[in-house]
Structure formats: structure tokens, C-alpha cells
Image (cartoon, rainbow, N blue to C red; front, side, top):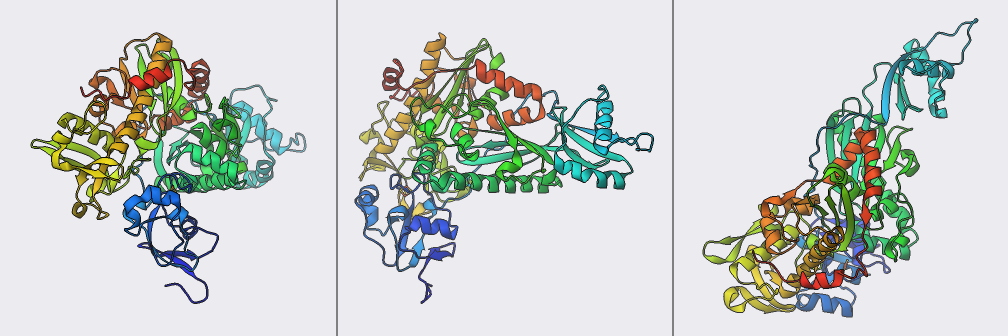
Length: 613
Ligand code: FES
């Protein structure tokens, strides 16, 4: 309970607390207490997802809160970012507002590749100096390295001062024998006693929602461990636009967000090393991919230019720096290499995904899609590649959907039309009582409702076919997916006409974007659609096709390719040839800007109806 001296806010059921500060709203108090609360809009009062139930005196509801919560306000629900409790008290956080661990996609596929990493290791035996030949230790090291690499003696290398300082001790303890790691055949990045454990590399896919790290042995290319976590920047907003605007409104935000990811990445490296029985200080190279906003924010580059036409990034070609400059706790001389971006909204993640699927060698017209808040896509055919980014909006990640949520426990991930018709049978992540719909669940619900005839191709509910399962709600007609007694939050689980419209906007943006690329390339039929990323992987191809999410394509030609961006990052970590290929690929890819494109608006409008085939 709150103490007499310092009022506190207690969050239930996690029993975490923070001091009640008059200037802080409940979302800020939750962040201070370490309570994971959904806040997709970053606390701007726009998304309605930070719902909590204060049990004590709270400030009056704002007009925006009243509009977003409707009748739920009478049930005691409030928006944490719009409400404060200056005198402290208890706050209940309902299950749908808890930022649980999402189901993170860590797998992908890659074809065999030739091992050719930037780091090579060499076992050396240095000449013993004498009065006749009193050669300096560093030069003897360079001579041994040149010999080990079959190079002319006198070949120069770079040796950082920290390693030069460590050299005498290593030579004394090893009797002149030691193990050296070279980067690009030029810079000595590690010196160890002879026979040291192999050099390691880390490939990281830094997504807006999740981050995945792949630990590899650079001596044989083996994948040793994978670790994953939620992107800790969620309190600044769920999507890149919210995070960019957080940087614009708060000068501290850029550094804070970068630091949050660095800390999380250090933890991921430690976790992966613990799984593999290795030490993080053996990681000598880190290759990173992510969208352009993640790139800028992580590297502490002002992302403002990404949010304004012409959406030009601050740096497009690969960025390299010592990992320690950002606070990464890897080997002291480890390097970080970020693969190239293509444009403001076509990042290194889609470049890496294109590398993973070999887009530069694809002959038959193939669409590679990474679906999220932004649908990034590449159309590849006969060695040509066109890329664009379409503002699909947050619906596919459960945003702007009345009871939408990310793919976390309790989310409906699939629906099935039972033999007897409605109601639909629901499949829920971890088999819990449902509390909301994630993206794949929404697509599945709409597909089944279309199949049942309860939803028309225009996106309107058919009152006759939906019968008793339809009711009138705050946001228009609603399909009742589960009664209150069967849900995890004790309220009915509903899908409203407004939710259907949100998904229509998203799928129309994706389809129209793909069609613009097809028009531009002179392609009239797709032979394959490759779906990268979590959403694409969990999507049922037949359901996506029924919704008309892609231009016409056979169901068997729609294929999930797992975390292709992560696979591309691993390829670039293990092979310099693949790293160069990623660069060539990003140069060869042509970017098509959709805003203001003469075809996009008409195609977007034509893409709104569902297909129902
Ligand atoms: S409405 Fe509170 S975080 Fe979006």
C-alpha cells in the first residue's frame, strides 16, 4: 500500500511500484516502475492501447480519452498516458494492455555459402630477438603474420595500442607463440595465447518490435546460438514514425533509445554466448541489419530527414565503427558493420532479405514482401529489382484495431469455419482464453467471415448471414468472436466494421504498391510471392489470397521464408563475398517512391474490395 511519507503507485498484478509524481502520467509511472505497458503511439493518446484501471483518485478524463474509450470509461478503464494519480494508489493492468513477450521469429533458411569472413585467425610463432638481431616485438609479430599468410616480409599491418601493450605479456607466457586475429587481412583485432578458442561473430536483425542475434563460429561458419528479445524502444512508440517524432520532441530520446538497444544487445550477446559456452569478448565482428529508422537511432544519427520528403537517410552505404564506440561489450577491438540501406523506408533489413533469397539471380517475376507497419517489398525478375515501401499502417501488427494486439500469448492467431457455420473456432497463442487479435488472426477472421458470407467483398457485414453473431457497438456493427465468459479479460471479444476497414486499408496499400512495381517493370503476372518476417511467416497463403492482399498469384506460389533479414545478416557476417553482393544488390535495386506516384492512388482504390476466391 502507499506509504504515509511518499505516495506511490502500485501496479497489479505484477506488484511493481514507483513514486507518485504530480508531473507524471500513469504510463510514465509504469515505465519508471518497470511495468511493460502497451503504448504503440508512444503516449500521445492516439492508439487507445495503454488501458489501465486506476483504483484510487485519478485526474479527470480528457476529451480524447472519452472518444477512444467510449462506454469502457464507465467500466473504470482509463488511458495510462492521459491519466495521473498525484496522490498515489493502486492501478490494475488488464492482460490485453500488458506488454508480454511476443512470439519472435528466429528461424530462416539460407543456402550453403562459401566461408570467407572478414576475420581470419592465425597461430604464430615469433622469432626470438638476439643482440645480433634485436627486432622489435611488433615487427616480429608482423613478420610472423606475413609468413603465415604467404605474404612478402615487411608487409605492414595495423596494431591497436591496447594490443601492443598486451603483447609482451603474451610473448612471455607463451614462449613466443600466440594466436592473432586479423580483419580484412590488415588490422590485428585480437591477440590471445596460442590455441585460443575460435573467433566468434554476431549477426543482428534489429526490428522495430523485436531483435534477434545469431552467434556464429567464424572458423567454420557454424551457427552456435540464437537469442531474441523485444526491442526496448517500445515505450517511445510502436512504429518508426512515433520514435522519430519522439527524437524531435525530446532531445534526450535519441541517446536514450540508442542506449536501450545497446544494453539489450549486450544481454543478447551474453545469452547467446551462455548457450554456446563461449565468452562475449571472443566476438570480433558484428553485422547488423534493420530498417532505416532503427539504423539512425541505434547509431545516434538524427532521424528527422527520414520523416520529411524526400525521406533521404543521413547515410545509405555501409557504416563501420568500433563496437565499443556505442558501448557494445564485445571484444575491445571488435567492429560493427551495418549493411547498406536503400532509401528512407527501404532499409538494410530488406536488402539483407533480398540477399538471403538471392533476388539478384531470380528470373521469374517474384515479389519479396516484409510486412509490418511499413510493407517493404522488392519485385525481382531476370536480374532486375525494384523496391518500394508502402504505408500499410499498424493494422497488421494489431494496431488501430479495437481489440488488436501483437502476436503474444492470448492473441487469436487463427480462425476456422466450423462445419455448422458461425461462430468461428478460434486458435489462440499458448491456448489461453483470448484477449485480442494479432495480425494473422485478423486476416484469418476476415477470410473465414468472407467464406461464410457474413462479410461481403466490399467489407460490409451481411446482417442476415451473420445473424445473432452481429451486434451494434460503439464503432458500428461488430462480429462477436467470443462471449465475455470465454475471454481472458472478461469482456466480449469483437471485430468491428471499423477494424475491417483498417485491414482493408492495409491490404490495399500492399497490393497497390506491388502493382505499381509490376507496372513499372512491365510484369503482368507474379510467379512467386515470398513472405519474410514474423507476420508473413504466420500468414495462411490461402487466407491472404482470399482477402486479395497480393496481385493475382497461385496459392502454392506463396511461401514464407522465415526471418530472411536475419539470414542475410548471417551471410554477410560469414562471407565478404556476400557482403559485397549485398552492396551490389542495393546499388542495382531501383527505388520507386509511391507518394505522389501517378498510378498509386487509383490502384489503391481498386484494391480495397476483398477477393473471396
Ligand atoms: S493512447 Fe496511450 S499510449 Fe497510445
